[in-house]
Length: 397
Image 1 (cartoon, rainbow, N blue to C red):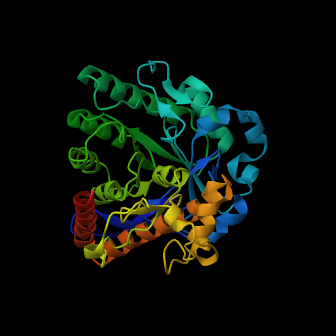
Image 2 (cartoon, rainbow, N blue to C red):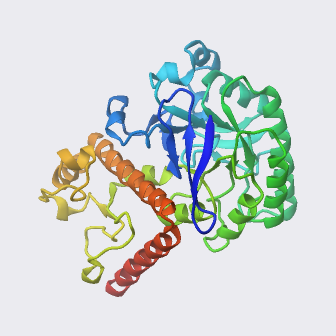
């Protein structure tokens, strides 16, 4: 893997490119990693993946713990790793233990031996040697080291312990690491700024290709997040990429980008799709019809619409006018509403295609704003637009 920063905003936001060894085209950052279940998006089948924007959609996030139910590491290895087994030779895989959907850290059961997770198989304790056996069999392009993630409400002593364990497991994982694959060192520390700084300093001393910033989305407030992120990114070398999990909402993504984060997970898309919601917010964050907004029963908040709502039963328009995704080019709100009401799985497939396409467009707009030196203005306008919509909605409630 190769990474290079190509442009900076007036602050810490930056645009760059990631070059994966098995993919001929570089992927621009900041970018979105598509969340997967055992290597494939939750509702999009492999034959529909080419309908998503390329190469923006060619980086997939996979949780190694998903493979603890079913195929053994030896079987995956004998199949040639994830790329060969899934037939996705032109896609990159980033392996991270936490996926924020089915494999969540369980800090109370984590001990000095390994990290504990709540998984579909129950609560599991994963040791570094077991984790590296999974990584060796999967052969991902990028993989993050094992970490002891803790929520914000733990004690300072528990925070210090989590940092000590994460750094020790980092050394263990590096010592056991196979040839190939870029190692991303895990950085934790909860909501304690000093522990975040200490962990970042220790990880920055190691020979890693990038950094995975863990422990976010576990109870910290939106107001305290920028200080935590800036404390970390100010220490890390500029020439290496930073990946984060737990920041999904557009406002949270913008916070991360403003602090210099390059790679983000896409759990937000999964939760929207599962609920039957489709993204509709303007990609520049400015809604020209904002003054005409009225709260209705269609589940719309000028960010997303609820396609289960009866108002769409006879709506023959696409989800977003002018959208060039497969769903909007071929299907209507009325058809998707029908699919949802009869519990047809195709509904989630079509919604996830649109939501992924729309969110990739949001990241594309972020990159353009950074390249033109307008990211701070873009960020401010987007937040103000979203805040105004919420205020108007509250007035009509």
